Image 1 (cartoon, rainbow, N blue to C red):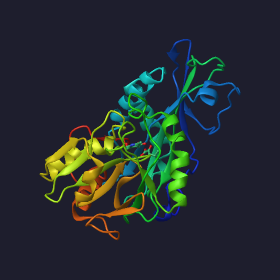
Image 2 (cartoon, protein in one colour):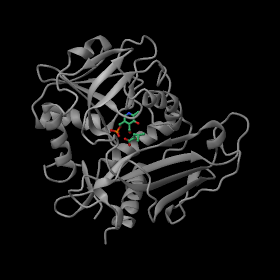
Image 3 (cartoon, protein in one colour):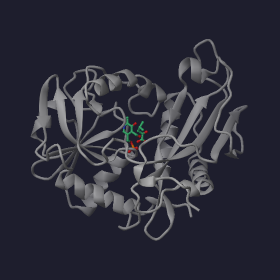
Length: 340
Ligand code: PLP
Ligand code: COI
């Protein structure tokens, strides 16, 4: 039985659900792990996560399909990306297969929180890992906790698919050779001040440029950029300090294989941005969020698709991706993992 929640008015917030998966790492190995009901964690004040921010996370969604199944989208890629993140943060990788099994366990146990088909909402899953033992000298933890909780969510940006306004940030998100390409909690800690500054000025998010030259488009605090050229190509920025978005990698395939578009994954000079026909953000939380305008130190770039509606090409990409995720359009092999 579905919970009594007003699904269509959900924003992107936390609603505590009944079960979460917990697995602890001690004496050099992962324990068995399983579902628990306690949403709280009690740790020593000197735990590595509190002092030196040894923490990373992932994000993925579960949905009801048209034919009544509950599915997740490419969870193996989240598992692999978390393993890549862990390698950079001196954390132990959580095995990919165990990760996918844990995702299924959490979704199945909280099935009543999966928003019904057609509501536009979904169940957001948040796998994360923290260093739990006490350390005071700067060094990695030796004990860790891997967890997955879930929460039903609606659109990430207020207004759903109405175009958002961005500003070009004077802060950097990620340094060359830094941690921009992994999903470390510290990347988001550094973004809290810039995003609040952006909000105070009336913008939904920041566009970060490359830290070294401030001439190339990187990404926002929580999503990759996609652009559409006037001659219908999909262009998406390439850089070693951008998080490799699973949505973006999927959209590149959708654009090419389903919509017959040319796709370019390359450096995008900021100077080229005013030439694009459409601009959007993509990610698990953002899905595809259209960008109506970008403010560059008082100079406003407005895309031809305008400030009121998502442009025609992004709309096609959005509908095709959502159709694949909701089981209405046949998915490439392995993209849709059925939970029940
Ligand atoms: N970029 C950043 C910085 C993110 O936090 C996210 C969210 O996960 C993304 C991009 C989008 O990645 P994905 O499509 O894998 O959710
Ligand atoms: C996601 O899209 O899953 C993210 O992690 C982005 C943001 C909520 C941090």
